[in-house]
Length: 98
Image (tube, rainbow, N blue to C red; front, side):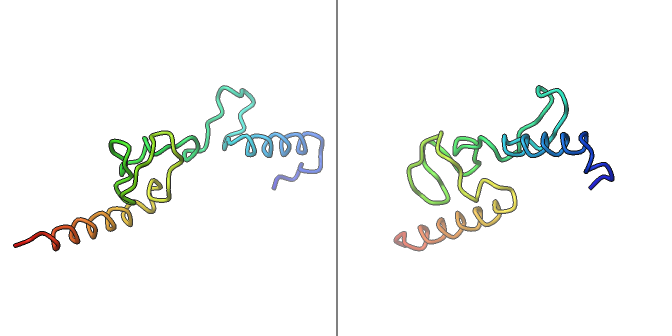
């Protein structure tokens, strides 16, 4: 924390920071139109790389485009989602008659 956190200016800055965080912003520029939302806010299944034609490809279930995303939309979990898809495809291929 800064050395002036006990001053009125420091308290005002901290109040603005907390307000911006609660509103979903990670920047606290004085100009509100310059604030940017968190990257994961307002993400829907329609934004996910594993969603196509109202179907979640990872879960294999119908999901509307405006539904909230699951963990596989996040970059750290995408490889896990790809692995689930590969395993599901392999299981389907094994079931096919020779």
